Length: 450
Image (cartoon, rainbow, N blue to C red):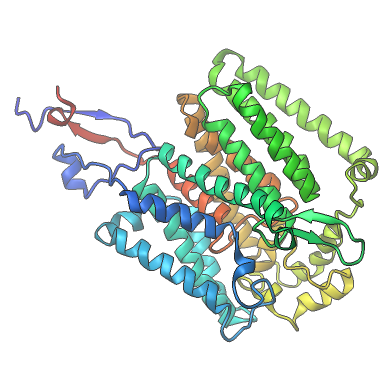
């Protein structure tokens, strides 16, 4: 038999960006090598991910977190991200078709992004929606670029570098430049670490995801190495006074433990699922019946610093435009629109969003957008669990842990459909990475050395 036609069919590992340049080449038995990233691209990705955490933004001129000017936006941030996307396009220009195919692999994600961009047609602030739609497309492209150029294990290493730089930088800043790194409440005089971020919650969230990532990528968690990292992370979270992160840090560690058990103990998976379900039900029942005492023990009020008030007051505004929403970022960025009434009624005059990912998504792009998100998210979670069942790779653990933790954080923060933001970038990459092509790649015997 001809050596070129002596081919076999092998399944694709979704954690490896294998690219095929056309159906004819597949049928001919030709194999296309993965596109490997260069050294400078690794540095570029780490820098871009650090920027996407919003670290060091308070060093930028102007009020980065003020309500955005509808006519021009934030010029410095725009310049930085335009530069990032130009570098990204230059590095993948020859592979732009493959990048497009990867970005379209998760149909729910692609349609949701398109729907958000289309919301300019009914947006109350079309200039803002138009600019943010362009940035949202760039964010989708960035996530696809990560899947195109980096094997998952290598990318997780770069993610750890990005988290580590911001966390270590925050600790040094708090000790060396306390006026910059430590926030002082003018009313109460209380101090809270924020490090290189604009707020304490951002630092706490990065620590939680950083420790979760470290716990999942380690082949075997060694206590003498891992425990000091957890202790330092816990101490920094305590110094931030970010009670949300203080709750989610042990939740993240428990989540990683359960995922590892599920991955390595096939015979006890049903028992583990049952145990987890019982644990979730009991925890929910405890919080429902002891909510006031629980929040008081954390030094929080039962309204979660005004979050629950925002949620309740958001419902009537959702009811006004339940299907389409107000347009991408139109509601909260309008200083004189419906959001002003909501802020005045809640007493939280500077509330930047609904502090709930689903409510915020519903306000922005309506019930249609919420359905599109769950189409993408449920599919990604299902594929991640399937991958977890089939192999014992650290990236398989990370996919599941990240998706679950991201959704949990979405209960009290915004996590979905955020332009130029690290967690939405990582969600895009995850959604692409866990979806397998419907067919198998045909690999010739010559390539396999048979």
